[in-house]
Length: 192
Image 1 (tube, helix red, strand yellow):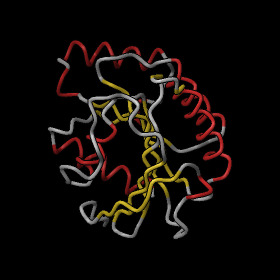
Image 2 (cartoon, one colour):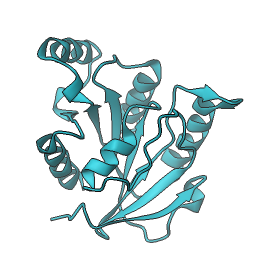
Image 3 (cartoon, one colour):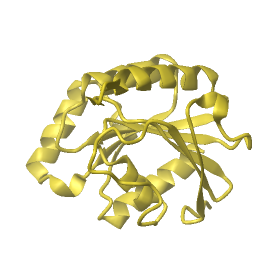
Image 4 (tube, helix red, strand yellow):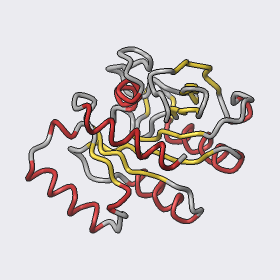
């Protein structure tokens, strides 16, 4: 049993070569800027301000490593789909992730976050294709599910099915609804 509340921020790394050396299994979190990655990390670990939530998209530009109960690293990747101040985050994300996927020996699971109010973006589909092609274990974590009604949830489910997404890999979550977070925690434990 993993105690998700026993968590420590370890470091921010500009790339995989600067990752912590403990060799724990890694759960990587990826998604568009402003999809709710920090809120999900805080909810998963039952902490209000473990991960910094920002109203400015594209705030994370490094790989942020969190040690969860000395059992695994939760790794927060930079968001994609946003460019500001001359920084092309898609390019940064692409370079960082291709190195990460090529070099990580400890990656056990990718959590691809998508906003419940949006359809899959081109970037989301590219990441899904990549994970399927290289047989990388993943879950699609639909965030902010408290912000949509049943009709909107059904529309999103139809879109995901039409996009050939494996529906058994989907977790509807809301950082405000603890039961959805508990379900995701247990999915992470199962994957590890």
